[in-house]
Length: 456
Image (cartoon, rainbow, N blue to C red; front, top):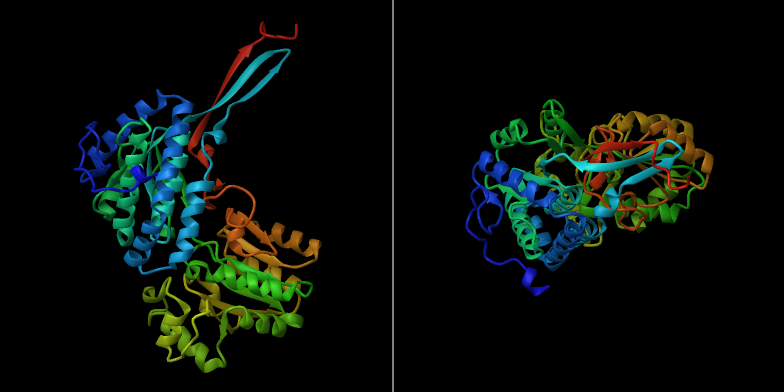
C-alpha cells in the first residue's frame, strides 16, 4: 500500500483536466469536473466501481494516523486514539456496491426488475467533528451508488478535508477511475456552500452538521438528506447491571470527548439505584463534582453570558475543563459527572463536551417521559440500561430515535463494537437513518408484462 500514501499535491485541475488532486477554487469548475467524472463512472460498470472503492479503502487505511493527527491539531477537538477508530469504521465498515444489488420479481404476469440508479452529482457539506471520516464515508457511498461528490468543507476543518480529498483522488486514479470523481473547494465559505446548493448540475444535497446547515439544504428545493444534531439521553432503571452500565455510559460519553451527536449527553437514573450508579461511574473514569458551587462554576464556564454553549470548550478533554475550574484531575478521567434538576441547561441543550449531568427520577415511567422531552424530537439516539425487556420496549417505542442502544455504549449503534454497517451520517430529520449507498440512489422499476415465464 506504500504507493497509495499521500505525496505532494498535484496542481489544481481545471474542468475535465488531466490527473490532479480534485481541489478547485471556483464552484462552477468543481461541479463541471464532477459532472464529467460521473458520466465516466456510470459507463464503467459495477465491477470497476468495486475496484475503485477497494483502492479508496486501502488508501484510507494507509493514511489513518496522519489524518487523525491532522484533525486533532486543526480542530482542537476530540482524541487521537478515538479518531483512529472512527477512521477505521468509516473506511472499512461503510458498505459498497453490494448495498445496491437489484431486486427481481417473476410470476405468471411476467418479470419486474427494480434497480437503484444514481442521482448524478451530489453536494456534500461536511462537519468539523468528523471531517475526513465523513468524507470517506460519503464518498464511498456516493461512488458505490454511481454518483460523484462535490465536498464543501467546514471552515474549522478545511485542511484535513482537503487532504482526504487528495488521498481519495489518488486512489481512484490508481484503480483506473476518472479524475475528479470527488472534488472539493479550496476555500470554505458560506457563499461557496450556497453556490453549491444552488448549482443546476447538483442533483442531490447531503448535509452533516448543525441545525442551520440542515435547514438550508432542506429548503433548497432539491432532493436533500439531512443529518442533524441530537441530545441523546441514557436511561438506567433499577434492574440494570450497574457496574457495566457505568462503564458503558462513561465510555460512550468519553469517546471523542462527546463531540459525536450519538454520544450520551445526560443520564436519567431511577432514584432507587442512583447512588450506586454514581459510585460506579466514579470508579470508571468519571470525575464527580462535589457540590452545587462546583456545578455553578462549571455551568458558567461552559456557557456564555447570553446562555449559549461556550465553543472554547467543545471537544476538549475533561482535564482541560476541570483545570479551568481550578480542579486538578488525573489522566484517567474521561467525563465530568454532577447532579442537577431536569431543567438545567446542560440537560436541555446539546453540549459537545465530556459532561454528563445526572437527573434522578422516581421510576422508569417518569424516566421515559422525561427522556422523550429532553431528546426534543431530534429522533437521533437514545440508550437504556435494564434487564427488563418490557421497559426497554416501552422506551424504544416512546422515544422513536433512529438509534436505540440497549445495554451498551452509544457508539455500538453505529457499528463500532456492535453489529451492522458503519456510518458517519445519521439522517434523522429526513428519515433515511444510518446512510449507506442505497440512501443516495433513486429507484427505477422496469416491468416486462406477460409472455415471459420460464416456468410455462
